[in-house]
Image 1 (cartoon, rainbow, N blue to C red):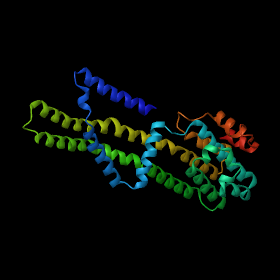
Image 2 (image 1 turned 135 degrees about the horizontal axis):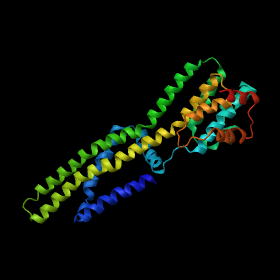
Image 3 (image 1 turned 45 degrees about the vertical axis):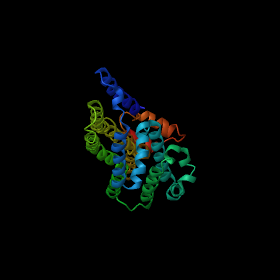
Image 4 (image 1 turned 90 degrees about the horizontal axis):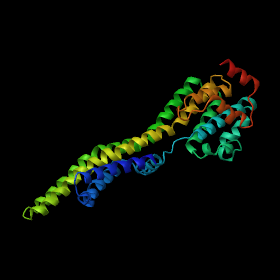
Length: 299
């Protein structure tokens, strides 16, 4: 919604200001100039990027338009799932938890956290690292290095539309000049016509330069930045998982490990300690063992 509001303000200010200056709004409507600029931009975008990135760009733009970032409720589910898995592993051992992480979509435990299950990549991420914990041979620093590498790779892949659209935004002013040059060529071909007709051709050509600059700095550039912000926020649950699991591997009780994960949630969505305990532990019908509470108080 914010993207649409911003675009409406930008376009409205542009057209309103131009009209207030005494300009004729109809002059700005040059569809073939837009075809040259946007068509060339789309064509070069397809040339420069894999089709997977091209397809993901549409998804990324829609996510940016909807501001599809993790909500506090989603973080509660991530923390709740991690707590349930850690508690199962600590209290019941390897055999009990294996049935959940090997077939998460058939697991009664995972079924309690539908927003996590809806994100297949995050579900796979959680299951993979619980397998490493079950094996019990990986050192904490080795797991941390692997987590960092995988999260960095995931973020890099998710930001490909941002980098690609940023390149297009940089190229659009030049494409506007290309459209303007073609308009000038057309005007020169009509040099023997009346000054009024020649003036309309030159005006149409200059609209190409304006359109390229406007599309770059007022549309594609800001949308690409919004994609970056959205995708970075979508990667935050992975960091929550990382910090929680590292604390657990280091010997922290499940309830204490959740606090490590809670701390890396962005301030705007970060719940309080009491909210986490209510929603993920007490609220989930699972009371923390006495030794878990003792460790939390000691921490």
